[in-house]
Length: 224
Length: 348
Image 1 (tube, rainbow over the protein chains, first blue to last red):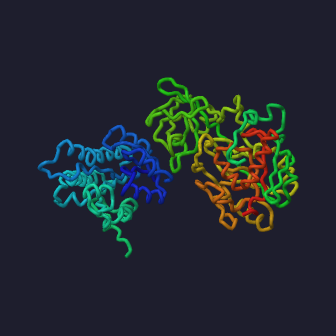
Image 2: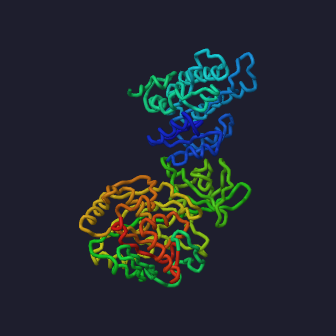
């Protein structure tokens, strides 16, 4: 089984990559920071790291080509939080918003298109979403609306492609760099590590749930 | 002297196979280092039967060498050499390979991801991603015919600068090689002749196969070996266990056999059958669990093989035997002389 995980140099992407490797997956993963990516994938058997920005069309083509054929899995995990501290929509710089949408909406769809053109009958697409896609949190208008768009794109991809399993999954709050960036100066050590969201993602990757939106920690409850 | 650091004088590099001078393969020298008594003895490979006893088990690697080097041309006309190392784990082994690129005898790292290079016979190779650092690449081969047939027609054996000219693939095959798959020869077995193996078998020494398909060697830098494909068949595992039970010695022919056997070994020295990819790296800290002896060539001081050798021989004896080998003009590399290390396991 082979696939692509974006944004794999740290956080949820790295935790998921490690778990998939243990289960025998062959993965092509990416991150913008090449050195961090190389450190992250060193020693992970069957993982090829390709540094680059998912917003770059050429990088996306390279990812899909390196992943081989068929592609069994695409995990769109790379995301951009946008400017911090998180600005209110009334003052949100539109150029920054465009960039957030490039990474969080257009890039995942573009990768999905490439995967569908090769492996429409077998592929699973897991788009990492957020509760900010449905809740109206102040300051989260840029990121949250981009994730809402991604969730709806996921749902419609599923409706249009019966052979495809397309999931939008909310991993829940996690102790990650993105969470720290969203709450600068706050102590986020009460958030669970990203590893706790991985079993839920694996349930989507390996199970046979219908396309749709899921919350990772409700799919699999960790034993008490 | 410290064993892992020595400069190999060029005069000690074996630049051609003995056959070129009309010699038999087993006409190379054999240094026997015994860990039990610390003695170093100088002999000849054809006298190997003197050092083995009935009931000892010689384990050989029956992987055959591929003509794994191909001329490759960049779009700007630059001529390079493409070297196939191992199939990409988990992918179609006809098409996806881990490769190295060379310019002359030097590594060539300036290729770009997504670059396509021309190969002979209307074939191409596409560089897909860096693999394990800057030296190796994941690549896709687009060939007009099956890979084995294509390599037979267009490939040649990998050769390093100390070998002055090209030699036919047959020079790079052990007499017992049956299954093509190695990028570079498992050269510890090269001095064996069918006649010598017959004498060993007639003397009661057992011979049994494993397979380990080698990737390109990593002697340029201090690099860990990467995953390689291996297979230890059921009857070989049973033989190893039986020989150990009656007090015979398990002698590995080459570091490739050590890697395969130690991959399926338990700390008590028993082994099970197994096959797949191995990541095992033998170091003095890890130690050797199942082999009692090692028949091998002479290794350069920077090669990861030397770590394994330190584990097998011990620092002092390794330093002394390499010192004597250098003083007496032993030859290094795949066409060179051999050494037999005994008493490996007994030292713990």
